[in-house]
Length: 148
Image (cartoon, rainbow, N blue to C red; front, side):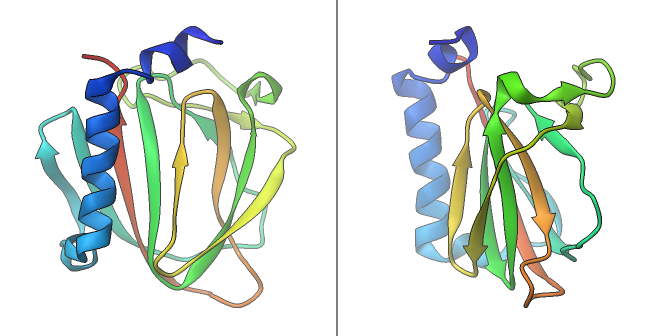
């Protein structure tokens, strides 16, 4: 088990993930304004935006400090998922934005309106891939801090 995964498996982190899922289940996430909304300061926040999935090559990314809960409010998209160790970085880790980008080969997971994916730091992901049907939609990405 990786250090990143261990940091994400404690009661405080689990409570924050559950809180994000409560926001989704209650419908509150569907009504949030564009941009960042703090739920629990930097420990749990959400970014809401209009999305335009694309067929063109996308950049894969991974995070060290945050779990992503990617929720599709409307529309739909495919999200690529791959083990972190398969990510081939194209640069250095950006600590300020908690992201490392690169390329990888993984499986595609379709996420439709009303569905979400929980993506932990041990998984590289490539969001915003055109699913063959939805050219635009709305999305909320909850950021859950993996530390006490």
